[in-house]
Length: 217
Image (cartoon, rainbow, N blue to C red; front, side, top):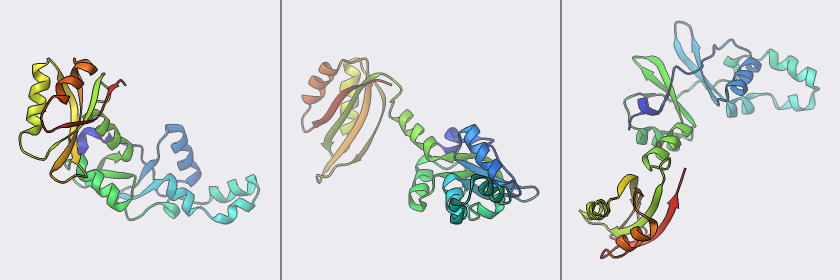
C-alpha cells in the first residue's frame, strides 16, 4: 500500500500571514490537527499543528484577562508559530516507510509532495486506518494469533488448511516471537465458526494458538 492510497488529497492550507486565531478556528471547525502553510510563489513553507500552537504561544498570556488574551493572539501570525523545518514524503513511498519516518522523527503528519508541489497530507490517523484495513478489522470474522516455527511454508500451510475448510483470509500479518526460531502470525478469517477454526488450527503440528476470538467492526 502506497501513501497516495491513504493520504488526504488537496488538504486545507493556510498562508503565513494568517492570524493564529483564524488557524485555530479552522482546526476546530474542520476537526483537523495539521495545516500546511503555503506562500504564493514559494509553495510549502511550514506546518501548523495543535502542539506547535500550544508550545509557541506566550506563557504569560495565562495571567491576562480573556479580552487581553484575544488582543494579543490577534497580533500573532501563523509565520510566528509554524514549524519551519517540515519533513515531507512523495506519494509513491510505502505506508511502512511513512510510518517509520513518523516514529523515528516523532511527528504526527507528513505533507506529501508531487513534482515539488503539495499533493496531500498523511497523518498517524491515516496510517492507523490503513493498518485497520490490512488486518480486515472492518469485516466480521474470527481473529487468530498463532505462534509457528520460523520456517518457509508455515503461512502457506495455515492458509491451505483454512481454504479447505471453506474459509477466507480477510487480512493479516506477522511479527517476531520472543522465542527463538518462532514467529507469530495474526489474521482474520471469514466463513468459518470459531470452534471449528480452533479445532482445525489447534490440530496442526508445531503451532500454538495464542489468541482466538470473534471480531466484529
